[in-house]
Amino acid sequence: MKFLEKYEFDKETIADFLNNSPKKMIDAIKDNKKLVGANIEYLKDLGVTNYQDIFLEYYDMFLMDHSNFVEIFSKYEPEDLIEKLKKNMKIIEYL
Amino acid sequence: MTLKEKLDLLNLSDREKEIAIVKNSATLAIIDERDFDGKLSFLNTKDVKITKAREIKVLTVSLEDLTKNFSVLDEIHESDLYRYEPLALTVNVIDIYKRIKYCIQNNIPYKTEKGYNPAIYTKREAAWKKFIDENTMQRNVPVNEQKDNGNVLSFEDVLSEPKKEEDSIYKIDFDGLEMGNENKVEETPVLEEATRENIFSFDNENISPSTPTEPLSSEDFDYDHIKIDDYLNSEIDVHDMDAASKELEQGTEKLNNTVENAKSAYEISLAENLDKELEMYNNSFDTVSFNDLEPESFGLGR
Image 1 (cartoon, each protein chain N blue to C red):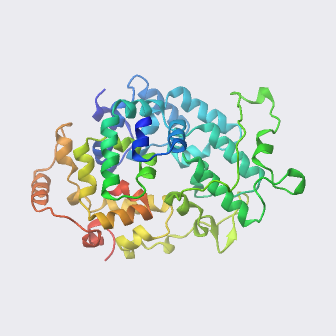
Image 2 (cartoon, rainbow over the protein chains, first blue to last red):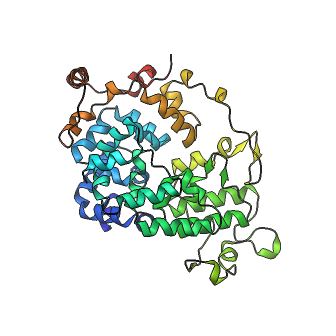
């Protein structure tokens, strides 16, 4: 899961994630790290400040096809989206 | 077993199924169909319901681990946590066990009638440390205070508490944990929501597990008058948001353009007028601001 360091995840956070996620999901993320990385990078480049928390909570969503993943967030004005996600990332379930 | 067959076995609403198709298809594909039924049966016997698309990943946990998780928390009579929050089944049960024990020993409120504090099952160790720091600081008691100086037990004291071998189905090997304020802790919005007074204390009174509380009446939340911004900014906890999500289900079909994407993966029969509506919607679609989304479109507001 070292590839997460490229997106500024610290070692402690990665360790927490590995310690608290089902093995099958971890294997799936490792097998699709390019896709997962692309989705993380999209959120990071969009300016979402708590993208790491979002990944830790909704990591299975990052296995989505990249174009579908982008489409979920691109519907909204970035500034609005960033602010709302920062206040309560659970709104991701309603996007 | 196809993805659709797996979905049909879950007790999801139509809206949650649509969300699962778009956001959780990969998770559904990962779930081993050989023990899919077995896991669902086990969870049913434990009265754990998978009702949200985001909870589907619970089924990627092995049946052995699901059983172990319940066994460990049954020892301290706290397996209700999984009924309140099925996603806690994906978190390391030993961490949850240690955290609950610490809260009990130090009389830190960690649950109410509505559910458990997310700090108990957070993935982030830093978030848990922040929670106990906040609760310990409120009482002006250092975290690592010695047992002799008061009622506060340090984490090491909890870990070293003798435990009978025959009482433990799984031998629990506690590692010493360093506690304290020396490490800077990142802010986690979810935890911030969970530890605010208005969720875990009512009328400025501290709530402990033994303190009876009256549930909020429905008059306290008049969802028809809450606009979308107020809804997103309101101090509503997860369980109230679940109640609000039922309101969101009404009138969201027009905004949902995910069926077009789902068609390639599933044979989903739709009413002809819905296809036309979606096509019109997609063709006229432009950047949408949150402020442009009228509350009515989410079934909220007047």
